[in-house]
Amino acid sequence: MAKSTLSDTQQVEELISKLDLDIRETVQTIRAIILATDPEINEQVKWNSPSFYYTGAMKPFDPKEYKRDIVVCNLHRGKILLVFPTGAKVKDKLKGKDYPDGRKIITINGLADVKTKQKDLQQVIKDWLAMVEK
Image (cartoon, rainbow, N blue to C red; front, side):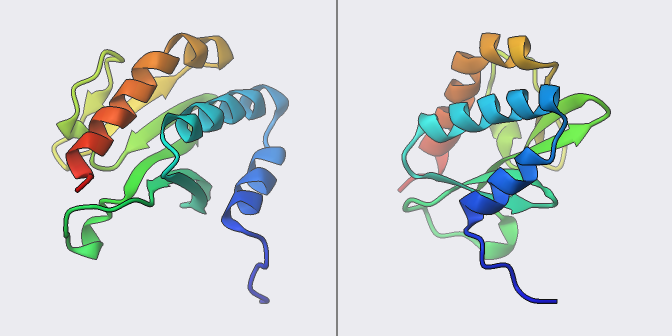
């Protein structure tokens, strides 16, 4: 199979364009919120989902720890789960569920829900960035 010539952003746009309209609008809004949080956040398709990672300078770490990964949008049975692979370290007002393996998962129940959670979602990301930046 030929390797894709689409950029990471184009791959994310293509993936989102194939979603049902109601989910598509919510994912687009989440995407805009996350990308607007910091200019050093970029996107890609990872685990067949829109995924966001930090491109800036970080403290040294083992690459197998995936510390650049900020959040993955997991589409799960009509809900959107925002999975922060190392987010359990961050306190949040969103009542995210923390897991022993270090993940934090925040559930988004549609467009209105993500809009009400925008500021708190951006704060979780900013707090996470403050922990990993040099």
